[in-house]
Length: 165
Length: 139
Image 1: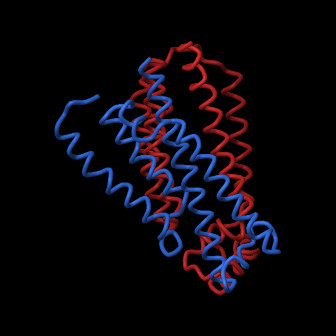
Image 2: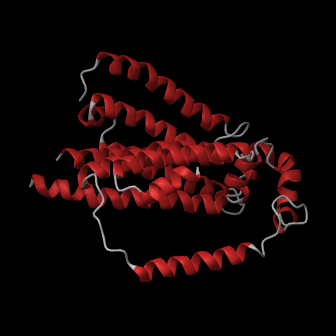
Image 3: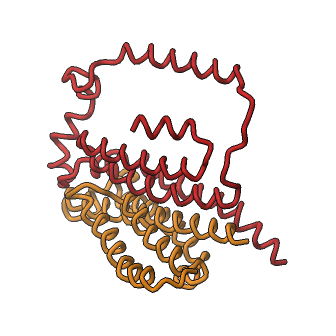
């Protein structure tokens, strides 16, 4: 995974970058699977490795295959490095992964895990959290997807109509 | 687009399998991994395979852009409408308990309706994106 990420950052052949990025998505899907999150792995494999690779390839065929060579810019680079350092420093304060006292395991999760079988009657807790406990959030997500699709439709579909006139 | 016999035959075999798998993921999402978002993408990928092999024009005949656009709205409305049903039955918005005879069966139907709504919206939006992009690529 690290190798693919470094390749994506360094290569100038955008076609290869898109391909390797797809492989990166597939690898991270495998990682999610190893961490017992098949729902997330599913999404990553379908969206990250599948559909977005296709959309990027389509965009590439409109824009051209190779990245333009640019002068190395020091201000953005130093900004990124500083931000990275701050973020890494922030992770030092994070609780250990998998520790039972972590806030993640203390807040609403025990209730979801223990009660959702009785309240919702569905074995897959992810689904019951997604669609029932957090129904409002999911509704928001659907509206976002719809709005994004509508935006692309207005941008791309609208131009086509003008050409026909 | 492509006149390769192998591609056409394999696609004809694959597309029903992909659609079936997508439907399985929607309706089995309560028991195993998966859910409406993933299922929507899987269903859309069936249309995308169709588009890659048979060409965008053929796909437009199967799934016209106007229909896809309408379906995307139908999915959102189905989700929102499920919430309105529970409002009409005297509960909070998106509280599925009163939809069925018992709270648990109400949750079951509510989640099913909502998931189908999500699936329709995601599938039609993804297919719409791919189709529109393909049109742009050609022109």
